[in-house]
Image (cartoon, rainbow, N blue to C red):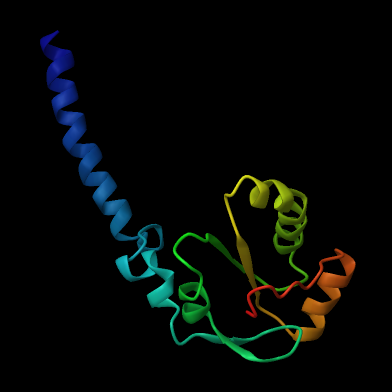
Length: 135
């Protein structure tokens, strides 16, 4: 028993030391405090809205929803990326359940790419451009 206890007391500090060493080189694993509040961290980040090209400030768009409404912000890579396509398909499939259960009231989907690529993605996946909140 004494050997097991001394082994455990030696391993725990080594694991903590190793963890701190690994985490010091993995800054992407740590979410900085400003990023934890996208309303403020995205303020001033403007992107053109797909259907009319009007510039939308993401921070203001997130802040404009009432406190009782829940907004899901999805940041995707380019429109032809497999993960983006799969995420849009999964969201489209789950949309009714998410909204009817009150989990999410509106969605903001940001895709890095040309407007024509995003339009093509919307056409291929039969996504309706609803504009209930004008953003």
